[in-house]
Structure formats: structure tokens, C-alpha cells
Image (cartoon, rainbow over all chains, first blue to last red):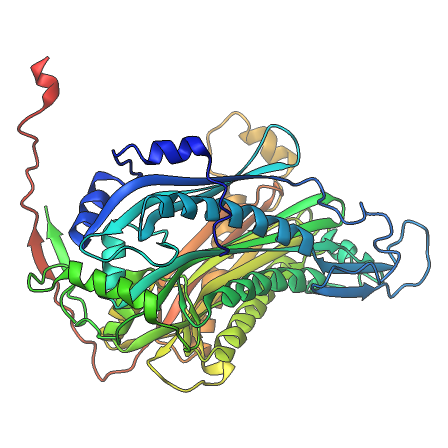
Length: 298
Length: 279
């Protein structure tokens, strides 16, 4: 994550100086934090609204007619028509390409919201932020997405003042306590998005329509290579982007969500979103005894 | 390690301070690990000497010939074959992904499966695991299981091991009734034997395929079988039956009995004081 941009509003600064703390923790998580020696100091939040209009690089014009439409520094794979020139509607090329500009916009929105949340935590003198929630939602205006990050800033009791940017984690309460007891310390939340656009080749389109015979090069059930490749790459890219943020640490509690959107016939976006807790081991593994199964009698 | 929940001598606050201080000084040079397991699941794995190594996935999409759902009799072979091949390829890819990462198996696999009129889609995501520090093994020897890490731990403690994911699917036409039968039955509440028989036919074929897959892995049984069955929403006279489970084999000479400890909650079952009664 980048460092805070230093744009905390004056009103927020005044509010944070008032003294009373706020927290997004449930009562049980609040109690568990106190048990760990983590004192809540404030509910911290960061927002960023991003223009999201530039979704299509070339608006569909030219795609499929050339194998060199390409991506901007990302994955590209071309699929050539095996049939030759048949009609102007016939797709001579199919293409999968990574929409790096979408991924960059997402990263900028997410990172800005995150950095602003962390800046508020720093202003409160917090060591870390627990119970982080992040969300994206569309504004009424088309093509605008709001990124929102929020969590509870905490100070470690009887510890020297923080010298670094606060750590963060999606966890709170007993789950966080177990992370510490298992020998891990939270470093930060990490997240990434991969966006793969699919401009179906003629064969892919025919297969998706269930066409058999010479057009789809099949007479029965066959694998749709172009979509398999796009789906696999979407997952791999999201994973490699998160890995690049780990710097030797571990990712725990990862959540991988994949969404497919169809803009028009044969024109898809496969977007995968991976997030989780970056944690660092601070002591060697010391396994528990094998857990004892219990049965609750009512 | 101290007991996470009950050790009174364990100073959690001191441990947290120690951990946070470590952030100021440490620069790690170890290999990154990714996992979708919770901390509880990781503790379970460590308790039997296993560790997570990597988040892995496998995907496949197979086409289904147009119109195959509408007319015909018996099994809809193209759909059953597409489903079987899609699973086979998705499993092969997650095997490969896990073996590349050094895993010996994949646990907690989330299975997403969708059947459309002209294609079937299968996506598998899970965490590759291995005995702590073990060397990489070949793709074919990696097991894939949708058992959670907790269930995997219990299975291993009981002396069993998972061998892989077994699936069986069958899609069958429910024959159309004759005009005479339709007219005769339209004012009666009667069993539609064409649908019932189609369901039985699909079930037998699917269960047999899953069991054949288990035998092919030299397993002795299949646990946590999930069944999805019923009419296909996009085809009025087609029914489907899909069974998916984890193949297991006893590796110890005998099943190890796990005797659970009985616990009784001391919480009151009836709330003695309710603020609403004051009004």
C-alpha cells in the first residue's frame, strides 16, 4: 500500500482531537481487543470516488478484425478463424486481453481509500486498524464507483508510540487473538483485481451457441479453449498481483471472487477480485495438540 | 504451544506487544504463502503436521450441442459427457497448480458449477497443503477434496486419507406422454411415472459413475456426498442428477475411534430477567 496522501480534511482532524473514541467493533470483539491489550481509539474511514467510464479501450471498433489490438503491457492471446473470409459479420480473429487500465483504476481507487483510512489512524496515534471492511458501490451517475474502507483504529497498551504506518487486518476479536497466538502479526490487508476482456473468436461463439459441425470444429462436447484460458488467467493475474504485495509474508483468509459480465454477444469481461490478510510470522510454529472433538448435550 | 482458549498463564497482552515490536525490526526473506483457510483451519492442519502452501484453482468450460435437451429418449449423452469432461479437466488443472506449488493435496475446495443450455462451466478453488516441509510430488499423486481443513484433520486422525474428488452426473429425458395419457390424467392427481422413472434412471447412472470413479482411485468409500437433482429449468422434459464427494481410504490397520468429550452448556436456557417486563 502507498503512504497516506496527506489530505485529511480539517473538520476530520478537529473531530478526531475531541477525545471520545468511536468503534465499529461488536461488543464481543471490543472485549476481545481489550483482552489483547488493544485499545480502540476511533472509527477510521477513507473514501475515493473514481470515474469508471473508460471501460472499453476501443469501443469494440477494430477488435476481431486484427490480432494486434493488444493490451497495454498485459496478457494478450489471439485466436485465429479457421474458416477464412466468409462474410463481414464473421469474426476473423478472437482475442483475450488484460484490461490493465481497469486494473490500474481499481488499484488507485482502493489504495486512495485505504491510505486515507490509514492517515486518520495515524492522526489518532494508532498502532493498527482492526476489523477492516472495504466496499465498492456505484454512484447514481453512470461510470462512477465509490471505494470505501473503514475499520477501528487501536493503540497497543503499554507500548511505545508507533514509529511506522499503522498495520491493518480484516480480523478482529477472538480470530485476531488466535492469529497472534499462532505466531503471526498482521501487516496489512491486501487486495487486487484482474480484468480480462474476451472478444470471442468465431469458433468460441459457435461453441457457446452449441453449434456442431464444421463451424465449431466439433461434433459433440468440446472444451471452449478461449474462455478456459481467460478464466484461468483472470485468477492467475489476481494471485500474482497479491503475491507481489506480500514481500515474503503470508496471505491468510483469502477470498477469491470471479464475476463474468457480458457487454454484447461474444464480448465478455471476466473480473477476479482477491483479498486477504497479509501476516508475518514472528515466532516459530508451535503446533497445538490435536483438537479434542466435543459433543454438546442440550 | 499454550492452549489458545484456556491457558491462564499465557500473557496475551505481552505476546501482542512482542509481535507488534517485531514489525518495526523484521524484514522477511521467506517464500510467500497464500491461503484461503481461516486461522482455525491452519491451526487444525498444524496440529497433524500439515501446512498450507498456496491458493490454487482449476477451471473448465465445455460446449453442449444445441437442442440436445429438447427431443430424444434415454440419457442425454452430450450433456453428461460435457459435465464429466469439464470436471475432469478442472481437477487436472488444480492438480497441476497444486503440484507446481509443492502441495500434496488441496483441501476446502469450493466447487462452482453451472449448467447452461449450450455449455457447462466448472470452477474449483482451494488451498494446496502438504506435510510440513515435504518435497513436491507428481500431479497425479495430489489429492483434491472439498472437505474443510477441520474435516481433513479429523479424517486423518481417524486413520483415513482422502484420495480425490469423485463426481457422477447423468441427464435423462423424461419421455413425453401420449395425447391420450395427457387427456386422461389432466383432471387427476396422479404420479407422472415418466418423470419419476427418469429421475431413477439419472440417479442410478450418476451414483454408479461416482462409485466407479472412487474404485478407480482405489478408494473404499466416498464421504460428504452432495447431491443436486431435479428438472433442468431450461428444458421441460429433461432431469439431472449430480453427485460429488471425496474418496477416502483407510491407511491405518484399523479405524481409530475418536471419542468426543461430552460438554454441557451452563448458560441459562430461560432468561430470568427481561427489561421489557418493567414497562
